[in-house]
Amino acid sequence: MKLSHITAIVSAALALTSCSSTFNAERALSGGAKLFQAATITDAQVQSYVAEYIAYYDKQNTVLPESDAYTRRLRKMTSGITSVDGLPLNFKVYKTQEANAFACADGSVRVYTGLMDLMTDDELLGVIGHEIGHVALKHSKKQFKNALLTSALKDGIASTSTGLAALTDSQLGALGEAVMGASFSKKQESESDDYGYEFLKKMGRNPWGMAMSFEKLQSLESGTTSQKSAVNQLLSSHPDTATRISRMSAKATKEGYKRP
Image: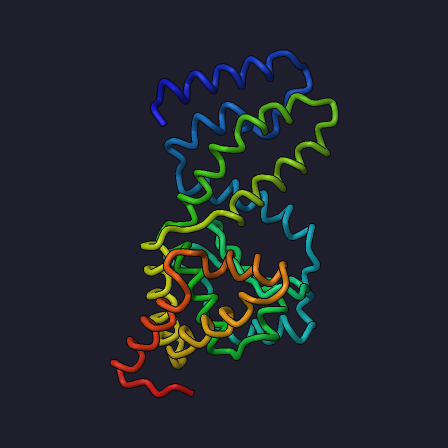
């Protein structure tokens, strides 16, 4: 988007906010300002925005406590994984039957119990490594930037409403959905597959876990609507699952790893 176009839309957004004395000053980068800064958004700003909606997203889900068996399993599996490229990581488990997981640009990693039930530790770590790869390789920043552009004007309108709190929460939810529902490119998915593969090796795990995790997710593609939705988010449509399985399997075989 050209800077002149951005400026025009920013002006429109600011015009909307000037009509109300209830503008949300606490969100200094709401609306038009968010749209303007999305073109040159910094890593620090991305992390701040993402942390805001992840805090909201955590409240919308059941986050299991440290004492829970699922959380203890995840803590044991990820012991020693504290950061990626200097960005601190934080792991939480969502209680849900969906087979899903995601990592965000602020270092938040969320794993669903449905995925934990489905996979072995090596397979699950492969998925986690893949998701962390999107963060390490800056894919998540680009994804969030696009979501910010599409949601900024609506956020500007929301921040002028007398129903400020409810609309702000709604906008945070919409922004989160935009990010969670976005797809990565074929190149980005392949790069993160390779990252997850090397991640398993670095953790002392069998990198066959990468291919085998895809195989299990592929088995859900003919499942329920919610399963398909989660699988589509994890696997995307670029490249197809069979190709990814074949590529990871060939890589493990070539490097002399035996399939479990």
